[in-house]
Image 1: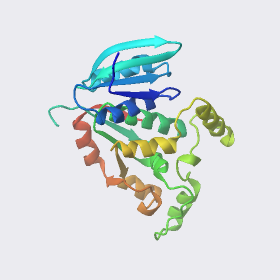
Image 2: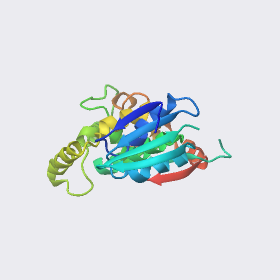
Image 3: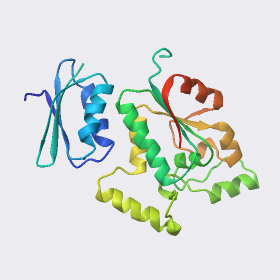
Image 4: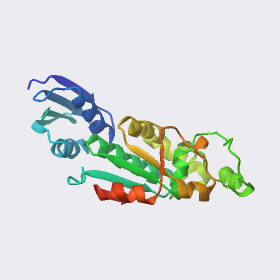
Length: 75
Length: 161
């Protein structure tokens, strides 16, 4: 899936993935897509929760070799 | 903002390393979710905001100096609420945090300030604990119970830690 920006949050523990996601998202324009890669197990539910709470749209979520990838469209 | 009630507030009462970490994780997470966050530090919680190894230059009474000496100076000196083991506990926990890539409390405080989390020191407990502004970190606000309550009214998450 295409994205405008990739955020590598691999190896980072809670709450860093959502903190970094917020900071990256601030630099994007509405409609652009942020791709987030994380390895923190909690991110599997944290990133969707963050997306919902901050009003963005989770387009897709994937897990491969313990790496979680999310594609999020900025509202 | 009053109609939306989407803020978060935390009263940080305890000055333990583990509780302070929990507070700052919730605060930074909440700020990342776009909420206005206020952390209100009172009693032992004020020790989290102390500068490390800084002696206050303000005029103090004997009792105030005693409190200053006896209480932990800043995030690096805090004890654990459980399994402190005379300081071994915090050392072990910091090692485990490092191994698991968890940010240190100092980093979390900086992150919180960077995310515009409002850090408020309770002036009444500063007086009671003998702490002065010159020994607390920069970027704090100083207020009392009414300010906290007014922030809490605009928030839908209010925690006492």
